[in-house]
Length: 447
Image 1 (cartoon, rainbow, N blue to C red):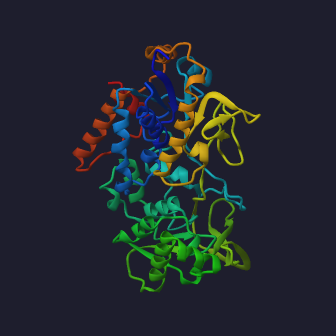
Image 2 (cartoon, helix red, strand yellow):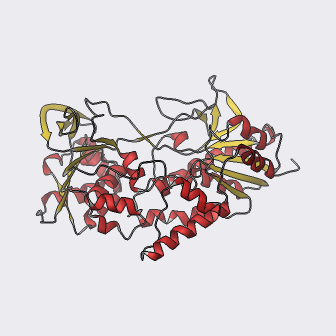
């Protein structure tokens, strides 16, 4: 090929940026354009990680280095399926990689889960992270709250609900989020796990962070600290499980202090029904027992918990993209080593997937690098047979978006928004304050 390989990446979160990075480090001359429906890049790092996680947020600097490469362009505020479609992208690029992630809440099939006062964790995370497409207010009126699930997202939600707003003021939370949390009357947050402590899905670091607040008493309810043969095997063979169990056991036997808010951890309690008629007034759980293989079964013993809000954190789910095959059961794009497959399970030439839309919402951000490597390896193996773009000039897609009247955000525009948020933070003595309005973000970016 006498010109650079032209590649479009749809989704500018870690998965898409890692794919771009690996491509730029290959021996192939390549030009990469990252398309993102939001005006800012970084996906779940910006809009899915709790604001009091500065160590995880540090990944932003590494992602920005990729965006700064001369062969990489950013097109923010461009929504796939609305502003640009697959046939459009095929005109301008030899290959298209989909890395749109997973941002919807997985459903939980129990009675009255949709009552007012029952929420998906992903929606709440989007609110406290200042996502531009969610409402600016959140109904924080409950004194006692239930969080369903024992993954990292569940602990994030529980921690943000339990902490005082002033503790979060040092982070980049927007002013509206601070004001909302400051008005919250919450005193107790209950986290429920269906299985035992050895089967918990959170990390040791995430667990220990619960206990760092001077205003939150973490209480582990000892009746759920049980282990079967499979649990003991996991403890013996997995250092992470051993650390989690050791921490939980220590917390279960310590004296309870008198901090003004309490965060309760309950294991072997499965949610079976949300209680209420016009709004949430309680949660019913069934006590479980371990079956020896790490699974559980109900005991027939039920408990009603006096809570006024329920947050389900039972997993994220990807959404179907126009013109792309989708497995609605797994919530992923069917693929073979990253090559997107059609209905006959044949690879679609020049179309690839990476990240959670490819493998499902599992694994930490670091796992995404290996996933991207597999996809890029497939793409480079196919390079000689890719369907070539008919309008490969880098200016062609710019002209297309301008003719469509799409107010897209460039690398330079994101730089302006980035500096603006840092300046907002400096005024308040903080590192950064997010802009939460899409219109304002676009206006600032486009100067």
